[in-house]
Image (cartoon, rainbow, N blue to C red; front, side, top):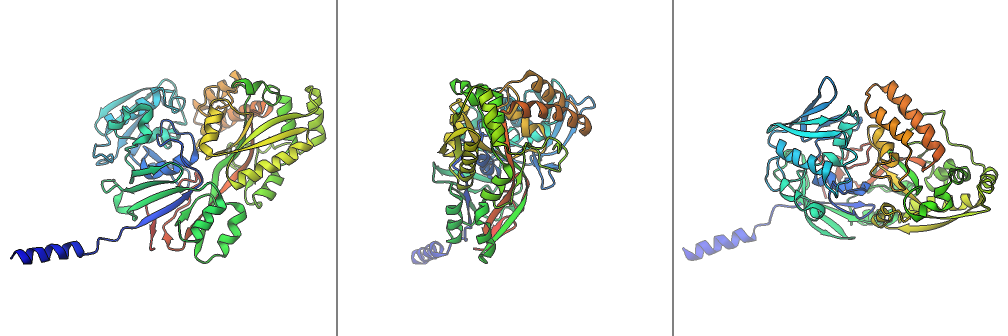
Length: 499
């Protein structure tokens, strides 16, 4: 009998384990911090899409759709928003996603010293638990962009058990998303595994998800073609033809609300006192030195959209009559002389990615003809964000992934208390217009306010928007179920691989 039992045990141990599927995703940068409260980069939002559910999501049509909240309604006076939470949703430690947990998260986002979400939720004066599945956000004033805010990092819910870690939450972000973090090796990989207790686990088809940060877009593509990766984001325009010709790969593209901008330090530390930051005439000269259409044709293969505004052409809050000025290097040099300079030198910080580096080189060459000596400093994404946050920059090229509400595309950069106002630009009149636009929901009234705002910041030029993106992803032919979204964030439900 002992021999029979032993033989049975041996047979059990020799049976093959169920096949585990792993999806390997090449991302454009290593995330800085995996805490929605402290996060400030686009690539972190890609990771959070796997780790952390939001209260509401944004669909391909840029309309809000349920995630942790299945319903919501505004009070008649627009001074409160009531959310109904999904029944049975749980955090990755087994705790329920209930109204008390939502209140704990929103209170942290609103008040914690380390939170960069405080500005986004400034109008929320109180968060009230109505019952276990109902939470009410009370506002000090009407705030039209609130649902848009809750569809991003301020709406991401973490287990209350980890909130007490404060600034160290990112070391162990226990969220409510379809995958939970198992290991992170800085600058190398982020490993996750499927969370079987997720409310949508039936639609999660892979067991493990591994993110590999590879800043060089060409190297990302090489890894995809060699089989080391299954899916990559942000395919470089120069690589698109190669992907389209490769039958082992599939290219997926989609419209984008993301745009590239140049932030200029006008008020943060000693760098702001240099000519570029101190004098709007110098910034005007810089804009007259560049040609956005040339940038698009040379660096972007003509695939993107030149633009000087945060909203894409053809959308409700883009103002076609406020077009960028034609390139005029002679006028640029005259403006510099008027400002007391023969030539102006400044450093342009650029992410260490080939496309952005080439954009920087084109700007450098064009600006030279307008009287500027531009030094390029190529930095890893988190290093550049840290430098801009402490005011250690003259100008920096950055991507903004875009939001469904216009407030989220411009005010965060330019409001005096905007959480991405690296250069600490401040204009009280502009702040007043942004506040007024948040209080109304009628599109014509909001359009008028944002147009007035645009006339102000286009004159001051604390930012020079350069172009709107188009999203390009590439994947092995064995990957199925990918759905493009204008926000550029990968949704992992429905994704599967036959590899």
